[in-house]
Each structure stands twice: as C-alpha cells, then as structure tokens.
Length: 235
Ligand code: SF4
Image (cartoon, rainbow, N blue to C red):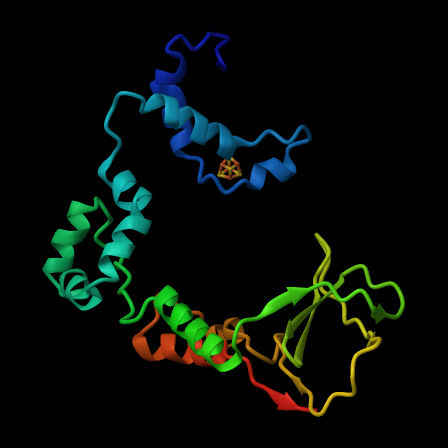
C-alpha cells in the first residue's frame, strides 16, 4: 500500500494478515483515532474471512473453545489438574494446545463458581421463601441523584430495599448522601443493612492485598469467596 500498489488477494492477503498479526486487538487506537477507526474489529472481520475454508492454528481452537473445555474440566478438575500441573505432562499439554512452554496452564478450582452460586441461591431460597420484585409507587428519595437507583423487593412481611450508586462514564464514583422514605409502610420491627463497597464484600481488594495473582490457589479462591459474602448488620 505504501508503494501505491493495490492489494489483490483481498481477504486472503498474507501481507494484511502479517500486519494484523502485530495488532493485539486492545481497541486502544479506536479512542485515539479522530474518526474512530476500530482496528480490533477490522482484524476480527479480516481473520474470519481469511480462515474461511481453512483450518485455524491449534491455539485458536484451544482458546476459542475454552468455555467448553472449562465446563468439561469442571466435572473432574483434579484429573485435569494432574495432567496440566505435573511437570512433563504439562509440557505435552502445552504442546497440544500450541501454548508457549514458558506459560503456565491455570489450575481449575475444586468447586466451580456456578456450583457455588447455585448452592448459595438454593440456601437463600430455602431461608427466605419465594421473592417478588415490586415497584413501590410510594417511594420517596429526596433531591436529584442521577447515579442512584433504588429497587424494593417484597417477601410477605419483609421488604428488601436495594440501592446502587454508579460512576458516570469517564468519572470516578462520587459519594451520595440520600434520604429515602417508604410511604404507607408499617413501622418496621427490625432492620438490617448489607453493603457492597470498597470496604465490604469486595474480593478485588483482598485479591490486591494478596499480590494480585494471575492464578489462585484453592486457599486463595476460598478467601476471595469468603470476602465476597454479604455481612448483615442490625440497625
Ligand atoms: S487495537 Fe489498535 S492500538 Fe490496539 S494493538 Fe491493535 S492497532 Fe494497536
């Protein structure tokens, strides 16, 4: 192109593929480009056409189907970890997936996130019964808080009020002080508060404290799960 020549091979052009191989698809250029040219999307489109009717490299299958492999591995994570974490066997596994030998294959945890979540959901349903999300028409929030949202969940004689505060795009999150009233609600016998913020239910903070590891040991995974639990405080 720099020599003023037209690329003749279209989607099968080796020169274009070679140039796009250097792109990490990070989308950094999209924000910088005055007309928002999105090289990452162009690369995906080009490679899709380039590989039509051809086999892709082995690592593309290994990582492209990682969700399916991970689902299979979650059936017997111990067996998979034996093959991927034992020296020698790991070398073979990395060769099969066309992975660089200096990289480490992440170990699978003994309990998947979805099984942990479903068990927690079942325990919560057993403890609280069936819940219903309602729009409480007599909910008063004072002032204008464009980043605050409020929902009310009713479960027989219990009410759960969920409030969120979000950051606007390109801004850091602001602390909002709001006062909320539920009109025509009976006097509460008891009230609890559960928080998710920088200091509560924040596994990311704990992950940073333990050195932001790329791969978690079973103990670290348990610690992060424990730190994500909601803590109920009576008011
Ligand atoms: S997406 Fe853009 S900025 Fe990111 S690697 Fe590719 S060309 Fe470079």
